Length: 145
Image (cartoon, rainbow, N blue to C red; front, top):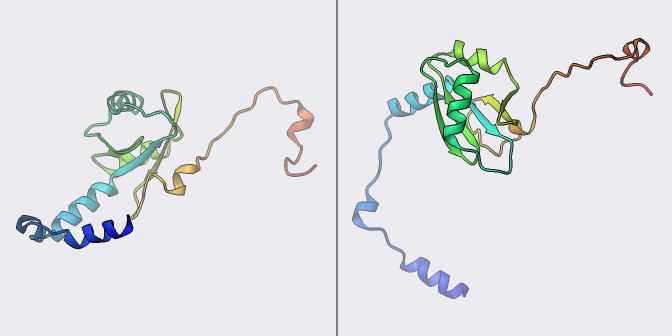
């Protein structure tokens, strides 16, 4: 079996068209980087695949229909939310956490090398409001026993 694979690798050859190089202009790289700098990347935390059109419809409304918002699916439950400016982006970033269909939509700013499997998507800060706590418990130091 291994010998057969090795033989096939040695027989592998590119066509003339495939041998042509692709040049990437620095302006294309800068344009993509600029797009990412006004983007949030979000992961819907679920084992079930979510629907792109559902995410678009829901988040546009939940976020007050921001002008120029573009939503692209770039992986399994992983999305890019591109805004027209940083102000719009920051408004939503600081309004977290966000939910989509009762599932956590964990969003973060772009950084080079960001992947849906990045550990940053495993953490989400939450504020919890607890009602009717007995007065003596309010002064307790939670860290002490």
